[in-house]
Amino acid sequence: MSLHVSAPHGAQAAVASSVAAQDLVSARYLVTADASSGMLSRLVEACAKLDVVPSRLHASREDGDGAMMTVDLRLTQVEARTAELVEFGLRRIVGVSQLISAVDA
Image (tube, rainbow, N blue to C red):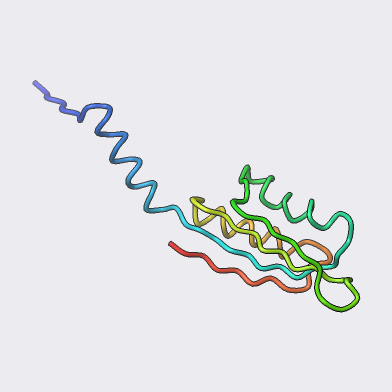
């Protein structure tokens, strides 16, 4: 005779969601790049490839001749691996001269 006891479905979902919530992070990327016409779309594409929508995206041209731009791109409630893959994607973009990233648990 065997006995199998399982928690109600709602309890399993609550445990799973609390475990998943612990694994989620917020990430911030400060990018300095060429102020070319396609740069913003390429930066957003690094997120879109992973099915992630930035929670903040702010771009402005740098002082001087305007040839460079600074972009503040933020992600919230994403898996740590996703944040890492977005960073790798941003670093590979031609025209990005500097990337500073910070990930908070």
